[in-house]
Image (tube, one colour):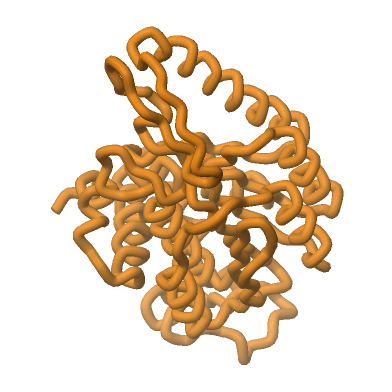
Length: 297
């Protein structure tokens, strides 16, 4: 199967076990890197560095020496690692899909699982925080292999439900984090932008790196409706009937203005803003993550 094929959401949906989904996405992404002009990025995933005078000989990896005839030592966390947090929006609106195989939440879970797999593969500690109107779960970051199982187990149990208070929850998270971390937020951001932007700035002021994965359903991006349609707000239950044909242009312009506000605010605060929808292959999001993460070191 071609790498490009198994990075597509509809293919991933056929794999029911989240651990296999994570490996499938991450390993397919890495294979794609090796076959692409971005081959050089693969060094980010090396778990060793060259031996230099002063290193403890006990840290030499003799299996690598046997294969390469060169001395390498295993990397230490203090030298290269940053603590990562996968931050998941549990709001009811994340459970929406129009005609894609995966809901926004399914897409976010697969992407978060793959990023957790990548981070632990390069010995980076990773934790998991979930929220709706407030923080619900907090799994402390670890870099050991068993951590991946704990992260995936919690991800697999999550369900989107209820209303969200994104700004309040992000302020809670900013108060929780005591050490510089990489915060990876997965959300549709369907709320008033200003409280969220202020909370994101609070995270940056605390010294944290932030990547916002803005995940929308492809129908929310393109509004492929005709005639009279009945729209439902999944969190408030409010219904609105509109003439979709005449409303489409207004909707697309409003969405672009909404994203532009976040895009500009994130740019000004040096926050990475990654715009995704549920029909896009996972490698687009993973490449954005890798490029942005690499630029920090």
